[in-house]
Length: 348
Image (cartoon, rainbow, N blue to C red):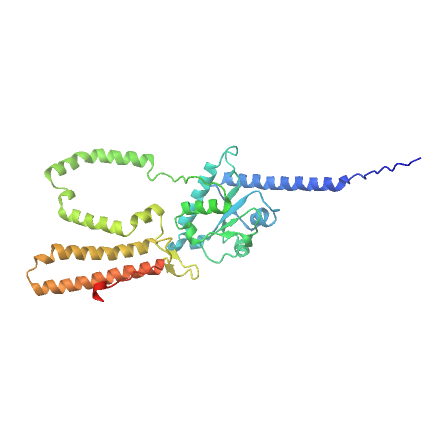
């Protein structure tokens, strides 16, 4: 008779699986608690920016298991340095809070936004959290760091000065490019409040009869040719100085040298950005050339002394050549492109 062999498989131990399942459940619960705590702190803040201390940095970052279900954008601040206007810490902190408010408002509904509670905005004050400054390696301000779900403080991404040159808009672009989250439009408060608009309308209605009387009698500033001349010069300067670019892009007048915070940078090397000061410098040079040209064509031609005409013409040409040369040199320094003059082929 044959004997049949029957193979029996031993059951898989259930204890390790239970331990792993319990561990995962505890980790998920701990991460959920962290998100809930951050949401609570965020709701208590007026602008949605959470104030972190050394203890909370340890709780939400260094001691929290990775990958975390959220990212942190941290603004490093120092109240003692707010008195230094060249650092623009107060303005940058206000714009940082504006980005936080806009992000929270645009992603308030978890059902329609995948960015809901995926990013929290925080700030760290140097006086209260010097250990956190050292942990992140922060030795100069302004300084903003993005800590991703799987990153520690040393691996976090620093926002370069060019990333917040246009303030809130630049910060928003940095967040969207690095986190793949959606910030949405920046909600800026209106320039004038409702009460200010009402007051301005009332003042206009009161002054309207007096203004009409001045216009009829021809005794307003609009009848003065010197006002029109000054306005034309201003419009010309406004056009050639890039002032509209500075307003739209919210470009700062200057930056602080990262290598030496005691120095200011007025001219930024690179074609991607132009500071306000360098735009005004170029506009001033262009305005000099324009005014000299207007003077030569409108005033100098009426001078009867030929020698005086020649001297003034020579001085105007020298100054104009110097101004144009400075503009060309600045463009070459910023972009690396040179402008070369070529003699006509018939001269060779």
